[in-house]
Length: 355
Image (cartoon, rainbow, N blue to C red; front, side, top):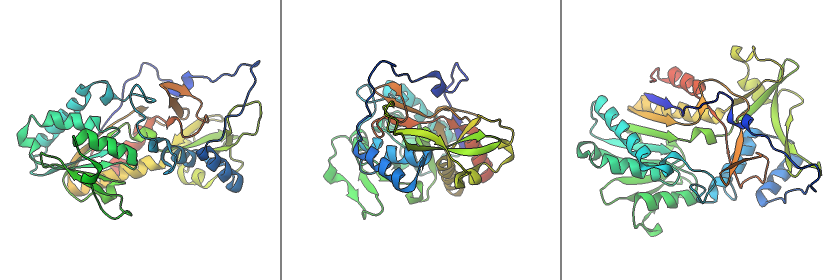
């Protein structure tokens, strides 16, 4: 079973539509300097043509050399945005109590592992474990914490939060190809890091994904003259604009257009309408549903989004402000609202279990 929660909002208007980007008509416009990542993207477009928004997001966020999440600590007041666990420990404690009640409801299994996708600083997991430690009958069943995390910098922060006083030399590393790292806490719980759930051993499990799906890459499509065209990212050579990249629509239907929009639900859209689709979200939720269906357990997904598809939610956040998504790639967080109906459809098709 998976439970999906989304924050309530006072407005049905997608967040990205609430902002407009202006330039003074009298100010002198200068192009942003090309960072190493921006130059890489610029050169890629020159060689191969415009990029999909999904490819652009993936490079901007997790490029191994200079992706946004590879920079280190981007959270909190000194970073670019604040997540719920950083506001109050109560959030993580309540999540921990929810898992406790699920453990009781599902028959009190003797062994439990907790898998978290995108653990941030490790604050949420730390707060959950602290709360759960007050319930020894459950706490003693926790054998492993599995953190799905690609960033070496964030892994170090998570280790510092979850294993106080530990050092890099205390971490056991498997062969470099697997990316698996492990360390054991004083209470006997093993903390492990890996790049994907396919590397997690089979065991009855709890899954947590808090503000994870909104950072996954999306494809954007726009209906033009009764046909769906993909929105792509091209070089912007206009010297009257400061950004080096711009949105364009494909001249012809792309492979992604044919793969994702050949469905009855997309036929009712009108010219000018846009939709955002995240194949990566499908892949992740499908893998989670498969894992839980095979091993038993439950999961909790908490994120920003709606119970329907949207088309204008891509946003960039830097220094706690919304900025243009094309501004200085790699220095700002990119995210888009989650289509929860899409996630629930995948879960139901895979396991038929959803609350």
